[in-house]
Image 1 (tube, helix red, strand yellow):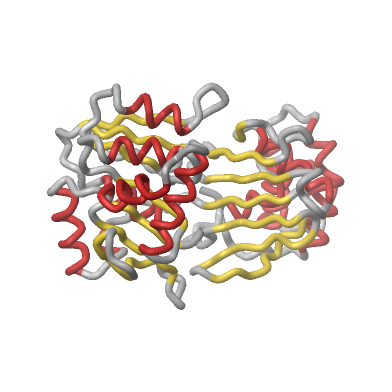
Image 2 (cartoon, helix red, strand yellow):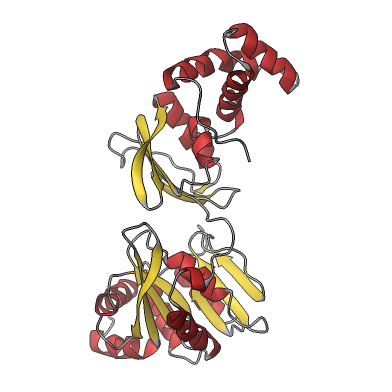
Length: 347
């Protein structure tokens, strides 16, 4: 992990030096000491720390993510947001602010190109929306023209370091209740808005599943951390969407089926799994209450089959989950469990 000390250089001065040194260092196959000598010769007024900072910035442009690399090295940053050329926004402690990183068009183009190596599909005019997971585990979404206006637009969600436990997300009584629910094989739906900590809670609950149970985890983009135990992980792709994965999971002898997030017609397939003897299933859903979750699940089920009988599906959904757990981001930026209720209850 590189140093995250405050820059001694003015941002414009640093950018100008990076632009000047980039072609010189790109053709240099010498060691780092030789490259530092090139930096010092080009800008002799820099002290050792400033020269090292400039070299790191050039290295980031040569092989990393450009100027954004410094934000990726900052452990206090949880989200990085690029809205085309201009200042980069970041989230720290649940609050958005303007960072001191400013990208020009070349900087944005470089970032999109480098992120494209990890996104599926690689973003272009024919496939302008793309998602991926970086080698660090950070999750990236890239949107380019013609969809992006004034873009490209990039959002990078940082991987939280270390395993977050239930006790960090809920009060002791709630921790005990959820622990009992997992031990008892109850099916659990986690809801909340974007950034409320749904995936973090799901990972914390997965860590409590008994190690002798076979868990099949299905995701559009693999972002759940590795957990101990007998876990089979499947990720959707061009040849198998999430619906296909849910159907396949039932033939893999699961004790529990876990879907990272329900977004579309896979809701109907998950319904079949949860109501056909597969207990202890878990998933997440964008919703702010149990009542809204029921409506959304019914709507998503309809996306799978135009001939779905609403009344029949609604009755099945009422029996699919035992508990619904609501996550929310507090005023201090902390993500916490704010409600636990039976799925049939309103909240």
